[in-house]
Amino acid sequence: MGEFEIKGKDALAFVQYITTNDASKLVDNQVQYSAMCYENGTIVDDLLVYRFNDQEFMLVVNGANIEKDWNWCQKNKGNFDVELYNASDDINLLAVQGPNSRATLQKLTDVDLSEDNLKYYHFKLGKLAGVDMIISRTGYTGELGYEIYFRGDESVAEKVWDEVFLAGKEFGIEAVGLGCRDTLRLEKCYCLYGNDIDETTNTIEAGLGWITKLNKGEFLGKEALKKVKEEQPSRYLVGIMPEAEKFIARHNYKIYKNDEEIGYITSGNLSPTLNKP
Image 1 (cartoon, rainbow, N blue to C red):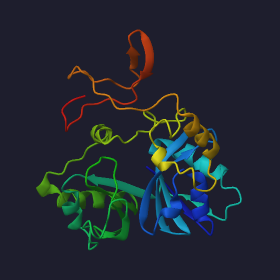
Image 2 (image 1 turned 180 degrees about the horizontal axis):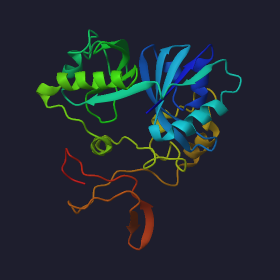
Image 3 (image 1 turned 135 degrees about the horizontal axis):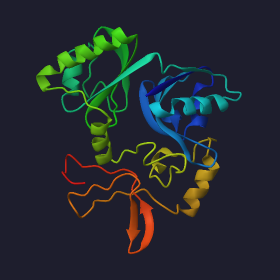
């Protein structure tokens, strides 16, 4: 992932302008799912907004889009009194997800990770495995889980990794990649940039109207998205389940109704919970 730090008197105003959700609703140490859009309403990227205080925020963007997203933020800085810093090369990020994630990480930190103290889409600053970090109750799997952000070189990252795996050994912790994450986020109906959303899709047709706050102040893409909502999208992102239980419809497969092509598959995989495609 990529991390952009935003600091200054106009930090909140800049985040409001560059993203579609209403960042003014955030309190300190809260996280928000959001998106950045072009002027025509199509999606630059989906992202997380972290609020430290009203003059300090962090945007967490998709790793494949770091350069594009960073250029977009710089291009639209305008007269906002903010300093932007691309911290992507400085920050390590590990996602620890699953039913035993809390028990695993609690062994390594004095920060109370209970639901009462660290609610969903909130974060705490503290030490974990002896390293200063952001401990965030987030993740893109739909499971109970955490994302931990920390600075340091390769040796620091290796130390934290080893400590997490030692703490999770009793629970059978395993290293997994994006293929595993993909099955889980798809069950939860989380969009994947480059598959379900991209620079040819807008937030309304993608079912992301809930992070598109047209009643807040001005933001990039607002007028185009307002028009899309008023006129209704000509297409929608929807979920389907093939009747053939062993058939997985993959990315870019065409969808036909009789002989008419009516759409295409954005993402397809096997649901581990349902054991169906």
